[in-house]
Image (tube, rainbow over all chains, first blue to last red; front, side, top):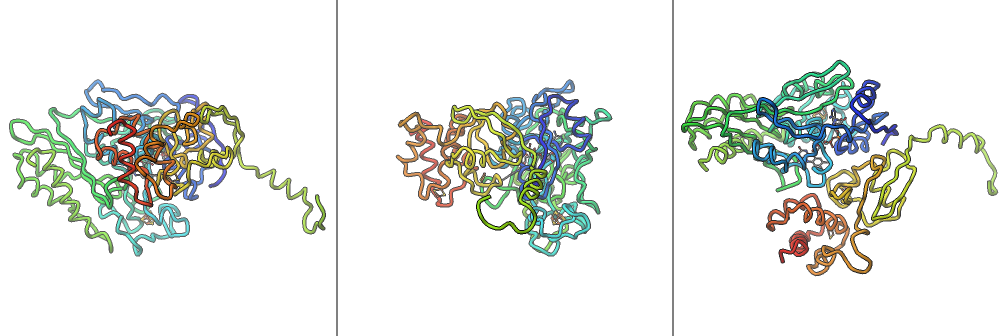
Length: 326
Length: 177
Ligand SMILES: Cc1cc2nc3c(=O)[nH]c(=O)nc-3n(C[C@H](O)[C@H](O)[C@H](O)COP(=O)(O)OP(=O)(O)OC[C@H]3O[C@@H](n4cnc5c(N)ncnc54)[C@H](O)[C@@H]3O)c2cc1C
Ligand code: SF4
Ligand code: FES
Ligand code: FES
């Protein structure tokens, strides 16, 4: 680990001014400390934001939900409002990492977490994300866990967050506070596809702080759920996952929100699947027909061709259980 | 200097060079198993290394040093965390409980006793982390069924494969057996 100076920000102003001077924010530390130890990350100064007042879960005026950036994954997953309004978020959280890590890790840090690509974590390997222009060892290497959607010639790494998949499905936004004031971005615009600059992962300006994520109000009743498929039953990242939310009234699907994880360089929304569902009546056949489009546009690599089929089945199964025709 | 002929650059120059590069450190006061401690440490020191290398509390184990095994689990302010991913400098004023702090004198913690009763370990390397994690699991109330215990204890790997008995030990201490 490279040496660094350490300060604890007493308030937002102190944090922002330290951030503007190049200080690196640390929340739960479960991504950052891990990568610093591998010398993948080498910040010269850490700004501890853990005592900032960003720990609230509130219902917004419009009936959506705002979760403060420093709410821990454990707190958010157990929060009565989150549980009542968006089960898909609780399920995504509780299927993430471990109880210990969820006690430490925060909502803001979770969407900021970096890829688990093993070449990214190995400083001796070529990796455009870690070392722009050095190449991508995963393209010709072992790429079973890598992405099939949103990839480029420069990088094929997945965004590993489960929470971000649930948030993307629900059209959530990210609230940011920086030296130039406040702004709000849709999560799907906040997280960037690799393109030719895989080292740029978020639309975050220097010194900007995530203050909260916001989930918009959706028509009720809303049924939702998250399914995660992985190599072992728990404490493992997704091979594929599906976040699903459905609003059914009068026997007809009026609103459908679907996104996939484990397959994309960013949380992957599935608008084609959603379009197939809206206006239809729930049935086994409908789920299968809609899910058939889950991997549209996929570019499998040498070792991850199985993900396209697995994704379709993952989406179908979650539609079936959430849609109540199980 | 004790004996020997010094060749190369003078010792003092070397020492100055090292001094100039002293990595940034901080003073931190925290309570470990009820004992207040104040130390000055290199900012890079993990809580796990602070416990093991500075305080001689070697019960918490270093398995992966990356959050992936749970052998280093301790309680910070009552919550179970991975001490290998916790920077000690962040813990000003914190209360840390390690495996060494669970027993009351000669009386084992009920979960320690349960691990013996259920024969829940072989080599014992993962055991301190399992027990501290189990204490957290019971406090959180995630012991409603064997399945729930398995899921909420999944942050602790056991290379000897004692999972079935670990689950029973947690069950016993939670008062379900
Ligand atoms: C063994 C292991 C297994 C895991 N399994 C899963 C899993 O199955 N699913 C899953 O989703 N995740 C998993 N994770 C990842 C874990 O969820 C993330 O590490 C965690 O959510 C990151 O949050 P943090 O608060 O610890 O972030 P930190 O490590 O503190 O920060 C991460 C990054 O975000 C920045 N940052 C943090 N907060 C803010 C903010 N408010 N504003 C701006 N920047 C900020 C930091 O500067 C840093 O760059 C796993 C991690 C480990 C170690
Ligand atoms: S897939 Fe991306 S993160 Fe992995 S080696 Fe290639 S460039 Fe690096
Ligand atoms: S040593 Fe901390 S989790 Fe493995
Ligand atoms: S008892 Fe040996 S690793 Fe668990």
